[in-house]
Image 1: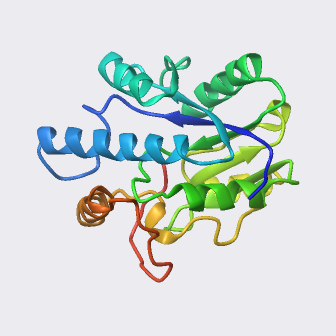
Image 2 (image 1 turned 30 degrees about the vertical axis):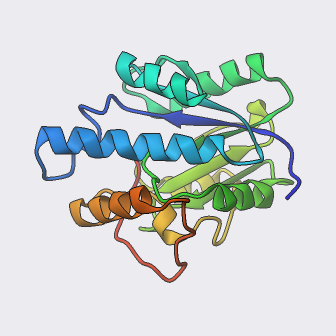
Amino acid sequence: MSTSPVVVIIPVKPPSVGKSRLGMSNTRRTALATGFALDTIAAVLATPAVAHALVVTDDFRFASTARDLGSAVIPDGVAGDLNASLVQAALEAARRWPAHRVAALCADVPALTPDDLDAALAAAEGSATAFVRDTAGTGTSLYVATRVDDFEPQFGNQSAELHLRGGAHELMGGLPPCARTSTTPVTSARRWRWASAATPRRRCSRTEHTTNGAHP
């Protein structure tokens, strides 16, 4: 589908500390967080509407891998404040690639397909800002702004409500449930196994349900 190009910002915690709410060994948790982020980046880079992927991370090993995939990488500019870091990244994206739309996407959506993301970005076109709820219904998986001046992400507790209050358009059904964030051990492991086994990536069923927490 035809849509104006987008720079997608993907914030990635160092995998060694990512998914800290999951009750599993550090080795397994690190592998899971790394796999989630790499699957997400790969899907973003394969999405027709995406002109560039911009990964924000302080992990130098992950940064090198992300560059090898084809994404641009910058360090986390505001430690401890995801939204401020995203705004700084959006300003950098606007400096490098002016006139592109800007989006922020959670790094833990390994079942995301390029078709699903392309459809969501197309649906967001025409709105100053738009967002997709996570499966729990309170958090946010994707936030899109037409202009960097309108980019005001509110990720965190009750972010969906905060985005609504800020005037963002909610994309109903913008992403299928299994392509949204997950924070429980069972759904996280199941989703990564599903995504990793898809060759090529399969579109997940829109009737699949998972239990997610607010992100981040």
